[in-house]
Length: 145
Image (cartoon, rainbow, N blue to C red; front, side, top):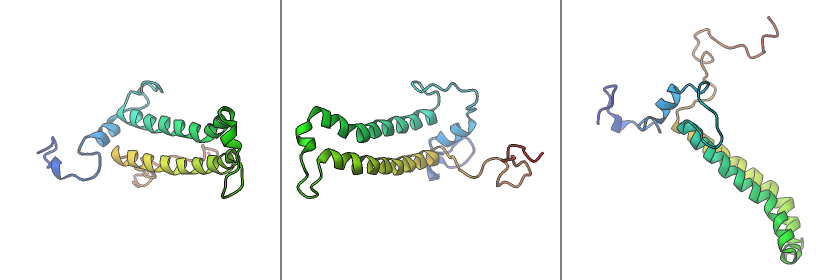
Protein backbone atom coordinates (compact mmCIF):
# COMPACT_ATOMS: atom_id res chain seq x y z
CA UNK A 1 0.00 0.00 0.00
CA UNK A 2 1.43 3.36 -1.03
CA UNK A 3 0.47 6.49 0.91
CA UNK A 4 -0.02 9.98 -0.51
CA UNK A 5 3.65 10.92 -0.03
CA UNK A 6 4.96 8.13 -2.24
CA UNK A 7 6.13 5.97 0.69
CA UNK A 8 5.06 2.52 1.65
CA UNK A 9 2.56 3.06 4.48
CA UNK A 10 2.47 -0.61 5.47
CA UNK A 11 6.13 -0.55 6.59
CA UNK A 12 5.82 2.41 8.97
CA UNK A 13 6.11 1.32 12.61
CA UNK A 14 6.20 4.61 14.49
CA UNK A 15 2.89 4.26 16.33
CA UNK A 16 -0.01 6.31 15.12
CA UNK A 17 1.45 7.73 11.96
CA UNK A 18 0.09 4.83 9.92
CA UNK A 19 -3.45 5.69 10.94
CA UNK A 20 -2.78 9.38 10.46
CA UNK A 21 -3.52 10.21 14.10
CA UNK A 22 -0.19 11.99 14.63
CA UNK A 23 -0.49 13.89 11.35
CA UNK A 24 -4.05 14.94 12.14
CA UNK A 25 -2.96 16.03 15.62
CA UNK A 26 -0.15 18.19 14.19
CA UNK A 27 -2.50 19.76 11.64
CA UNK A 28 -5.13 20.65 14.24
CA UNK A 29 -5.24 24.24 15.49
CA UNK A 30 -6.37 23.72 19.06
CA UNK A 31 -6.75 27.44 19.69
CA UNK A 32 -9.66 27.54 17.22
CA UNK A 33 -11.29 24.28 18.42
CA UNK A 34 -14.11 24.25 20.91
CA UNK A 35 -13.16 22.89 24.32
CA UNK A 36 -16.13 20.97 25.65
CA UNK A 37 -15.62 18.41 28.41
CA UNK A 38 -18.74 16.50 27.41
CA UNK A 39 -18.22 16.57 23.64
CA UNK A 40 -14.52 16.82 22.68
CA UNK A 41 -13.94 18.08 19.16
CA UNK A 42 -10.73 16.23 18.22
CA UNK A 43 -9.66 12.58 18.50
CA UNK A 44 -6.79 13.50 20.84
CA UNK A 45 -9.17 15.38 23.13
CA UNK A 46 -11.60 12.44 23.12
CA UNK A 47 -8.88 9.91 23.96
CA UNK A 48 -7.35 12.14 26.64
CA UNK A 49 -10.71 12.91 28.19
CA UNK A 50 -11.52 9.19 28.29
CA UNK A 51 -8.32 8.62 30.29
CA UNK A 52 -9.07 11.56 32.60
CA UNK A 53 -12.66 10.47 33.32
CA UNK A 54 -11.62 6.85 33.88
CA UNK A 55 -8.95 7.99 36.32
CA UNK A 56 -11.39 10.30 38.06
CA UNK A 57 -13.92 7.51 38.58
CA UNK A 58 -11.21 5.17 39.89
CA UNK A 59 -9.91 7.90 42.21
CA UNK A 60 -13.40 8.59 43.57
CA UNK A 61 -13.89 4.87 44.27
CA UNK A 62 -10.51 4.56 45.98
CA UNK A 63 -10.93 7.67 48.14
CA UNK A 64 -14.64 7.66 48.93
CA UNK A 65 -15.33 3.91 48.69
CA UNK A 66 -14.08 2.92 52.16
CA UNK A 67 -15.89 5.80 53.84
CA UNK A 68 -19.11 4.99 52.00
CA UNK A 69 -18.81 1.29 52.79
CA UNK A 70 -18.26 2.12 56.46
CA UNK A 71 -21.48 4.14 56.44
CA UNK A 72 -23.42 1.44 54.55
CA UNK A 73 -22.03 -1.64 56.30
CA UNK A 74 -20.41 -0.57 59.59
CA UNK A 75 -20.19 -4.12 60.97
CA UNK A 76 -17.68 -5.67 58.55
CA UNK A 77 -15.82 -2.41 57.98
CA UNK A 78 -15.15 -1.77 61.68
CA UNK A 79 -14.18 -5.39 62.43
CA UNK A 80 -10.52 -5.92 63.14
CA UNK A 81 -8.42 -7.50 60.42
CA UNK A 82 -7.03 -10.86 61.61
CA UNK A 83 -3.46 -10.27 60.40
CA UNK A 84 -2.77 -6.63 61.26
CA UNK A 85 -5.30 -6.11 64.04
CA UNK A 86 -6.54 -2.79 62.60
CA UNK A 87 -10.15 -2.10 61.73
CA UNK A 88 -10.67 -2.61 57.99
CA UNK A 89 -11.97 0.91 57.38
CA UNK A 90 -8.92 2.40 59.11
CA UNK A 91 -6.56 0.34 56.97
CA UNK A 92 -8.35 1.18 53.72
CA UNK A 93 -8.50 4.92 54.44
CA UNK A 94 -4.99 5.21 55.90
CA UNK A 95 -3.13 2.93 53.48
CA UNK A 96 -5.49 2.13 50.61
CA UNK A 97 -6.46 5.67 49.61
CA UNK A 98 -2.93 7.17 49.42
CA UNK A 99 -1.58 3.98 47.84
CA UNK A 100 -4.41 3.97 45.33
CA UNK A 101 -3.75 7.59 44.43
CA UNK A 102 -0.07 6.76 43.87
CA UNK A 103 -0.96 3.81 41.63
CA UNK A 104 -3.40 6.01 39.71
CA UNK A 105 -0.70 8.62 39.11
CA UNK A 106 1.57 5.96 37.56
CA UNK A 107 -1.37 4.63 35.53
CA UNK A 108 -2.15 8.11 34.21
CA UNK A 109 1.50 8.77 33.30
CA UNK A 110 1.69 5.52 31.32
CA UNK A 111 -1.63 6.17 29.54
CA UNK A 112 -0.61 9.73 28.69
CA UNK A 113 2.74 8.55 27.34
CA UNK A 114 0.88 6.10 25.06
CA UNK A 115 -1.41 8.88 23.88
CA UNK A 116 1.56 11.16 23.21
CA UNK A 117 3.22 8.39 21.22
CA UNK A 118 0.01 7.71 19.27
CA UNK A 119 -0.44 11.37 18.33
CA UNK A 120 3.25 12.14 17.80
CA UNK A 121 3.59 14.58 20.71
CA UNK A 122 7.18 15.10 21.76
CA UNK A 123 7.81 16.94 25.01
CA UNK A 124 10.82 19.21 25.34
CA UNK A 125 11.05 19.82 21.61
CA UNK A 126 8.72 22.73 21.20
CA UNK A 127 9.20 25.08 18.30
CA UNK A 128 12.39 27.02 18.69
CA UNK A 129 13.72 25.14 21.72
CA UNK A 130 15.83 22.38 20.28
CA UNK A 131 15.78 23.23 16.62
CA UNK A 132 18.39 25.95 16.95
CA UNK A 133 16.54 28.25 14.62
CA UNK A 134 16.90 31.24 16.95
CA UNK A 135 13.19 31.52 17.61
CA UNK A 136 13.32 30.52 21.28
CA UNK A 137 10.59 31.80 23.57
CA UNK A 138 11.51 33.74 26.70
CA UNK A 139 10.53 31.71 29.74
CA UNK A 140 11.10 34.48 32.29
CA UNK A 141 7.99 36.39 31.28
CA UNK A 142 10.08 39.21 29.85
CA UNK A 143 11.14 40.44 33.30
CA UNK A 144 14.67 41.25 32.11
CA UNK A 145 13.55 43.35 29.16
